[in-house]
Length: 114
Length: 112
View: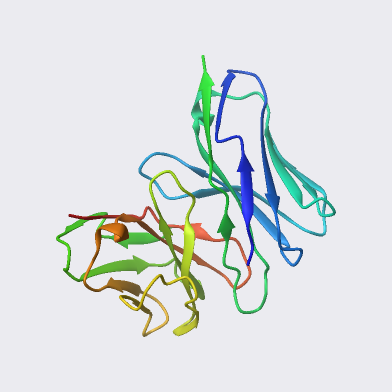
């Protein structure tokens, strides 16, 4: 089955700096890679996703890159703000007509300091 | 509009008790997923429904875990004879087929 590794486990940045979180996956059949933000006591919230037919996607301060050959994908947050502090999870799945169960990484605790 | 809702939000059970966790998906979402999230870990897949059909239950950790979605909308995850290792947050997610999954707030289960 799929295995997703995520680094770093904790990340502390100064407000306004950039943050980068990296993930690797093992199953070449995976073709959908979402990123979720989870705040304390809440469920994961989708912030951005990318499918395997593109290499990069950007939404305001958030961008995701995908290298299918190396099986790497990364989340980039620019101009970080205190409200970006949360746990971030990457995930991978193979989208089929029968559903797309997600395999998650172990999470990155991001702290944005004033 | 309304998102995914789950109840109860917190459940404390004595070891050996049975529990039932409810998920109300987003209206019209055909797909429904259950995940288990241990403290400090990422969610792990338990089971998947497309309408009322349970198409994948490969993640259920034992035969004490049972899920149903009889009318293709609300789903219930039942755990029989709870054990301490069942303590976790149970997350429900719904989606259109093949589309992004929207998660509920989860039910935190504590087994004493």
